Image (cartoon, rainbow, N blue to C red):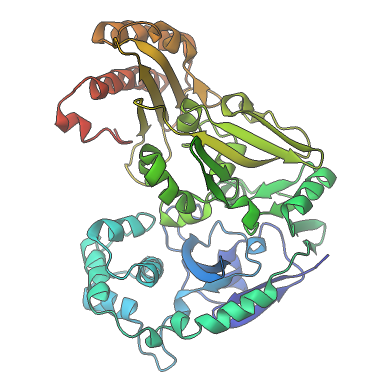
Length: 489
């Protein structure tokens, strides 16, 4: 058993043997280390003013990702390299090319958001030599500016891609070998337990150790990406104790691809899952592009989105529509159940004391099937769903509905199938008349609520209209409509 969290902050080794489990990286940087270039804006992972880079060892290599420091807990940083904006400029004051490009292209006015933009662009600069306009815009989805507008910032990104200097100028490239060696020395198989007064955080050394921790502490809060749990602390001021961090467990970050589907470990982030989804189930990859910003996708996990049980989680509806199954583990073994059965009621899942989500199996869409997902939100990017609907349709040779699975989030206390609608469609011809008649069955399946995202009437009408839209897209609708068929409204 180890009693310290160890990581590298810019160039300095940090060892913490007393740490509150809910202390955020943003507070640690600003209050403890006085690194005030990292700003606090929204405190919920939305504005990007607090963006930093986190480097971690993956398959022997050192990979850096942008993250939101405001909702990232310090306890999750063991054996990582934290990089803030202060680390970029040279000791003589010479700006990093990314910073200089922001100056040259007039990408900053009041300057409050600028460090976050710089760090997001720096993350892109490190990983993509000649980014396209689309890649630049995607990297900046999680950064908001209310002064300058984004065109000068995009131009700065284009400038640094055209005039890429020698890697020897860059502080991370110059020290890469040294950082790798230091991070290797920090890694180990021991479970870490750190206390602060009566509070405690635990970093299990393995999946088996995690199972034992959950057996001993069945009421512990398990944190993978903290994209939701972080808000429990920053917005709801919840006290969490103990907290178990699992984002370092590589055995939970595996994706197994076979002939039938994808097995996705509970610790796989949206960013890690994107490539496999883009190849095998591109409709879900399109959805991932609209989940948060790049910082959130680098932290948030599909397993966490499931385990949290939120009725507005974006991934459960398409996974349920495909017939996904979730695997739960404890010290007594593992069990698998259909994902739709995992959600029992609002805030309640079929998870026994000591169990945790280990993985989810996602079948491919059936051969020749039609599969679509629609996320309805006030903003196209980086917004919470008002509702999210998924449709998986199989037609027989005569054009009748052989099978259809429809699932919605945001329409009930849990992600839920539209079973009455499905029953109205199965066995009938896939025609406008059939679909129009089935719309009324939504009233038997869902009784949505009114909240700040949408009214109950809007949700119900939109769900019915999405069925019509899905029909039009699968029945030879004009190309102009099909162009908007991937996960938008």
